[in-house]
Amino acid sequence: MTTAFDPIDLSGKALANRIAMAPMTRSRADAAAATATDLMATYYAQRASAGLIITEGIQPSVVGQGYTNTPGLHSTAQVDAWRKVTDAVHAQGGTIFAQLMHTGRLSHPSLLPDGLIPVGPSPVAAAGQVFTYQGLQDHVTPKELDQDDIARTIADYADAARNAIAAGFDGVEIHGANGYLIHQFLAPNTNLRTDSWGGGAADRARFGIEVATAVAEAIGGHRTGFRISPGNPYNDIAETDPADVLETYTTLTAALARLDLAYLHLLESPDRDLTNRLRKDWPTTFILNPFTHPETTGPDALTHIEDGTADIIAFGALFLANPDLPARLAAGGPYNTPDPATFYGGDHHGYTDYPTLPTRNA
Image 1 (cartoon, rainbow, N blue to C red):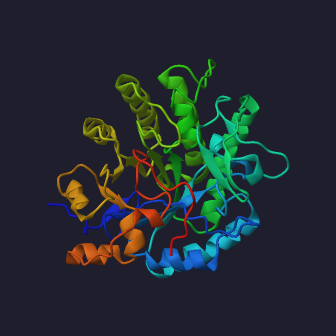
Image 2: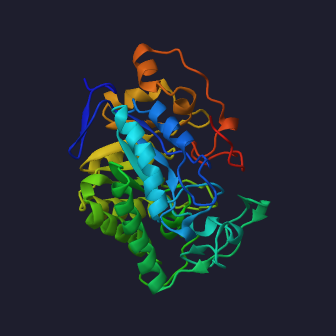
Image 3: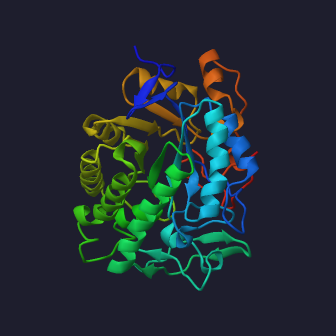
């Protein structure tokens, strides 16, 4: 029987175990240059016993930033700063992928320079507010991306992926979940386009497919992962038609599978049948962040590896509270108890209310 503590080959990269650290936004970067800090190097190195670390969301371009104090991968200074993080993780024997996260319409003009405004597939403002350096502000109506904008945005992802490899990352994860830009193209309430980038499921899936294709061509499919969250209403997403959800995500993942990516990372909905369908069809490593609402993902999630539901299980909040989590899981505890009120962007799924403000995780 395969267990979480067995090694696994991730597209040619040997991982020590099948326990991943989920991506969790922390808002700890240097604000002026959007660069990683020494504190971030310490934070990730402390958790290097994970088979795979997936970083907090990293904006692939200036306009991709949607939160205060988040890091980028679009400048030389940012590449140099991330090298401190990757060196620290590798010194501890870890493997680390950079998550590329363009927030799209969820940003705010006050977070962006040079008069930029947030962008999206359609001019549809998100409900709610965003935390800025001036406090909470309402989301604004985004600029609809035109054909040239879309081409530039796809190129930005590819450039950021190249920068990630230059910074020493082992690969990248494309964030297509949680209501951010790629998810905005996938969802029918945020993508109202009638051209070849919107409308039916295949056209709504096109942007994510094109991003993944460009990234895989830039750095290799074996160094590229992709994260999805079908049906997740987080950040004012409405994917409420089960038939459309199934068509959209099977269309997307079938195209991604042809790129021979390193993995698919599923932030699970309550629909286990969809999980099983995606698992059956996906040809390479399948990472699962299981649906555990209202609880955070706990040790019992490891049974999903034993029964074959997933190849790797991703933990968020439990990793914050327990930097040596793989050892504690192997020993059966004890565990420090995570407090959902003290983290932002962890392994929750947006099915309940979570803190609006980016908190400061230790």
